[in-house]
Length: 223
Image 1 (tube, rainbow, N blue to C red):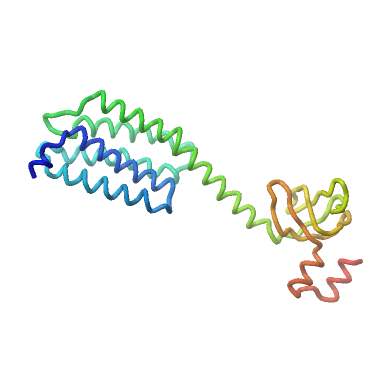
Image 2 (image 1 turned 135 degrees about the vertical axis):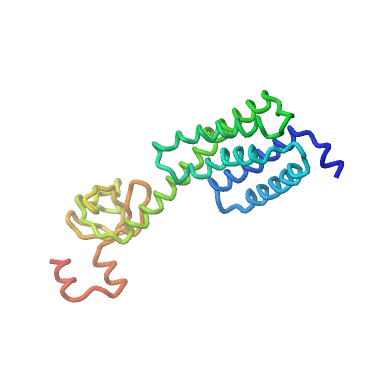
């Protein structure tokens, strides 16, 4: 008990902030499990010390925690609403200053911690969040376009020096590659997306694979 009471309040504050921001990090980069464990450990230990500290202002702990946790909602907000997180920094500053009744934290420490949080959020977490979102959007677009039917707008010969053509899919023009020689105007199916290029194969080939090619289809495609 005496050991718990002898801990410097500034260290308790730093541990609490570390635990809260570990939770924010876990919400931006989910699925690792490691960050979540660190969050629980840091918040558990800091909570014990806060409980044992008679000067703890629990209202200030709540205000401080709400200030940090506003950043958990950041990934789910439209871009033009995100400036409200500045309110989160204001709540953290307020909660930090009144965290311990009659024994305020070092104001320089509070300012340094807030500055580091701002840098961590804007320079590291936000770019990671945007990258993850872009990757998800790309995967979604891949899933949507694979299997779509299109039509060649230029001929393609895979044995040529420039083995690429162009294809129109969903009213969009794409560069195309294929293992098959394709004529201009030929119907094709998208089987893979390679960046800004689609890999396609003749529609008749796809229908033969799936067993969906009937006599009428074959006559229409070949005619």
